Amino acid sequence: MVSMMMMMSMMMVVVFMVIMVMVVMLMVVMIVMMVMMMIMMFVVIVMMVVMIMVIMSTKLQLENSIGILYSLNDDGHGDDDGHDDGRGVHGGHDDDRDAHGGGDRDDGHDDDHDVRGDRDDGRDDHGDRDDDALPLLALERVFLRHSEAQRSKKQRIKR
Image (cartoon, rainbow, N blue to C red; front, side, top):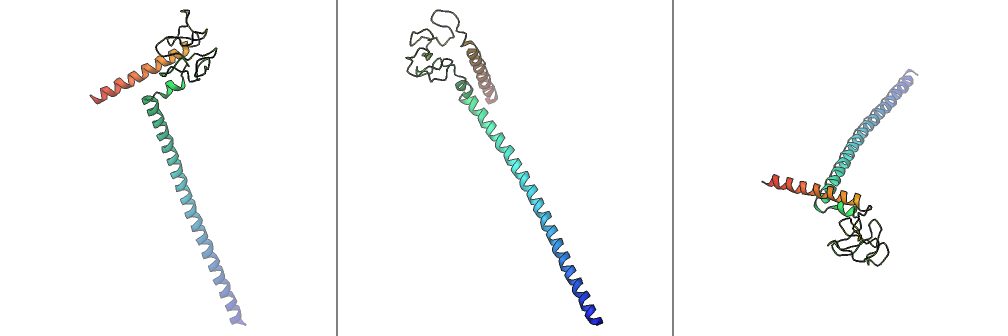
């Protein structure tokens, strides 16, 4: 009878020890998984920051080299090909045959000789100022000044 009790108690101790070892192993695995998750989150955040910085720097380089700022703020008063690309103040069609066709050549002459066919210098055919073109012309001047400053800065750095 005593040996039976001893066997039972020994079995209970062994089962308890096995359960404790399993619990401790589970805890260790959980802690390791949490640490790995934290490391992964840190890596993902760092990668996102790096990607955002790369995207912003390439965007700035494109704006400086090609002049995306200027093309996005095109006032519709003509491209180098003599056609309006439709992004302008009056949104003329590219064949310049509509009433609001502000698509004039870059040489300052009006292509379509209509009421709104203004020259690229911001003056209309009657010689007075075109109010719609003034803010865009100011923006163009600012952009040209900025690009000139960038160019002279690069040349100073080269020297």
